[in-house]
Length: 554
Image 1 (cartoon, helix red, strand yellow):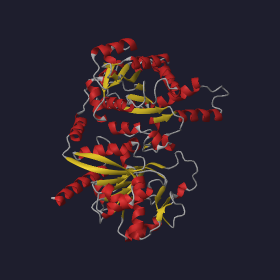
Image 2: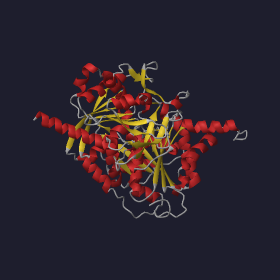
Image 3: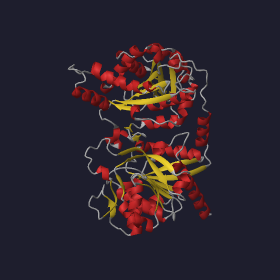
Image 4: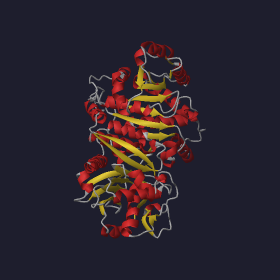
């Protein structure tokens, strides 16, 4: 049910706002709690969206090192965002936009731009009201579209952090602006277990809530991350000292997978509690049958494969978060457990590639930037191409497949990308024409969704089942069309092209059992309810390869 009266809200209603804050420590899982709650509310027929407010001063995560921040997620409209937006899309199966992720940097940039234009008419620009007003404007922006019954806002960082203070103050003001029936705050805290004492400790939660109260915000619901069940006396204690009702203390036990969390929150009746406190009448139970079906397939696989992920950021798995989750979705679709073998591209060379890759059922060469680990990625492509192991290259991975093919099949032994070697004799990968005059690094890549046409009677057409597709991009370099005929003459098929720009989007080798590379990022569109077909088919090819290996052995 949408925001037009069918959800139990009046036809011209204002949306309800939910804020998710965190205390005690970072990485407790605010994004997963927000996504889980949104999923439950959506499953009750409500129209829900989630937004993330990050307290750092970067305009967006686009210029952040993956080691610092993990993956940079990209939306259809070309926003470079926090990786939590990936969770939002994967759980809700809806697209997000520029409006769903806002940083302190963007807030200050907007305010300073307004000041330079003279919009404040000579007033002294201050955190209150100017910064907090800009935060509130951004918070309310999605709700004012009229599309949503409920807008959930996740505040990044921890309560008490200096950089989070203006956001908490904006929430305090909004409760006054909108009224308590239209706004609700959920505070996520940690209830640690001290094994030496054999006790769960509530003091960190009490202090965290007190800090939030000192900023003028009283949490309505407290979600407690814990390794052990919360007994009734602990819940009573938290409720008493934190000034909430006992049934507003929600247990969030450590889960086997993040996809268990919506069902755990349903068991704790978080969605019911939220609707009651927001005074929203909704007599539907959350319909989670499809979700349970996905979990059943995920947890009860009939197949088992090992995929090598070759990348340069493998020490920090969050740098490849969407790829990991896409394999979970595709694995469940195939009733297959996908085990990922993390292979640092700097550790790979031609002479050790057999040792590192021969036991795998498929190899994915991951996206990335810069020269480090490049030759390792090229060595990986060479080995899987020559040994008929299923291959999938994404963005830089596709470009490395083109370089390897040029060097070892076409005969252009010095072929390279001008990203790593500007003076290369054979620039088979080159900077996009429109990028050659770009000097600023932030938000200037080819970003967002672009159309692609797949070629008839190719693997790409078979996988997608249609000619016209749209995929998300994040790159500056591209396949150099000056060498197109050389590739085609040597047996490579260009199976996907952007007709407007002529940009090569998909390459494949028909002589190989399964070899495909894509310039775009399909992992950014895979969701629980709609696994991406490229991942689904890659997993299927790896299963077939694994079975062939077993037959050969026997």
